[in-house]
Amino acid sequence: MIETKPVYTPQEFKSDQEIRWCPGCGDIAILSAVQKAMAEMGHKKEDYAIVSGIGCSSRFPYYMNTYGFHGIHGRAGAIATGVKTANPRLSVWQITGDGDALAIGGNHFIHEIRRNVNLNIILFNNEIYGLTKGQFSPTSKFGQVTKSSPYGTIEAPFNPGELTIGAQGKFFARGIDNNVKLNIEIFKEAELHKGASMIEILQNCVIFNDGAHDYMNDKEMRPDRQIIVKHGEPLRFGMNHEKGLILDGLKLKVATVGENGVKESDILVHDAHELDPTLHLALVNMKSPNFPVALGVIRCVEAPTYDERLEHQVAEVKKKATIKCMDDLLVSGNTWTVE
Image (cartoon, rainbow, N blue to C red; front, side, top):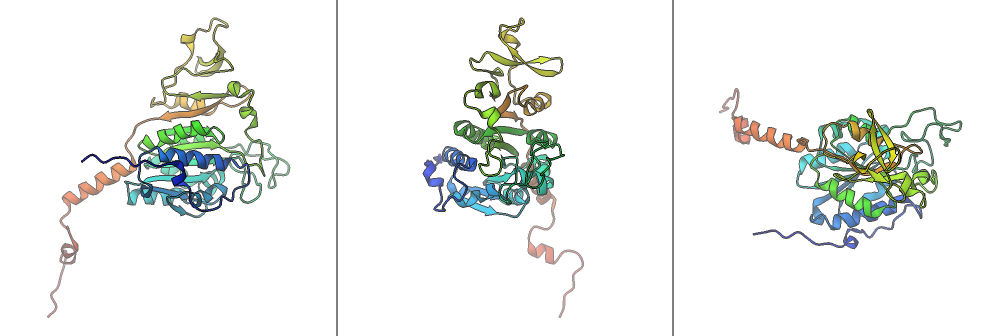
């Protein structure tokens, strides 16, 4: 008997809870994209589990009509790993922020990536601590003035993509809160990927860091300041798609087709499936004003997952074990009969 996939509408993934994010918060658009994507993924609603830590983003489970777990600060990765390991058939989604994942939760984050646990991580990156009212975070720009850095930060910020790939990550994608269509595509690709799928969403905090991503998201200049990467397609961008990325030695370079002898065939074709992460790292590190910011699925490489290896190990141990049940255990080793 062929099992038919359930059909849902996005509305069916909305809970009855009042959304308490600030009006205009980028989190609302991300929530909408997740609800629309999940309606198209073909899983039963009871097979979704959403786990969060602490922060504005971590209110997420309350607004979803699915199973959810609101954890403690920085520990969403540990909880999500436990959920997936205990019940591998679940589609597990970890919702976190730049502070929750990369500061107090940094240790858990890099190890769930390294282990390649088969779950999906959405990291809301607004480059600030929003819930605690505007302190600088691990992704705040160098020199940024905040409530906890009145003279400007003196720390180099993390790049979540670089950190993911450095932790042996096999899937990394980046979106921006107001591009709901792109985010839906990314979430669906993340779910299809077997392993730890890490998605950074550039998100705007309208209260404590409004406009953090405005330069690359300006409506008129967006075509020149963003590049949407797709596996198998040329790395082209620009108002008229006239610009592209080429290799200049070992470095990426922006070039214009038709200028300085640059031909269409010179433009690099994106290979998200390449095991060597060199070009993926170059793409995640591109930033304004010298380069466009790369959005889309940047890296997607197949590799054994933690879940698969664990299930295989358990099966192998069971085959060789002499103890098959509780009775076997109770009468094993030295035993005595008391009369």
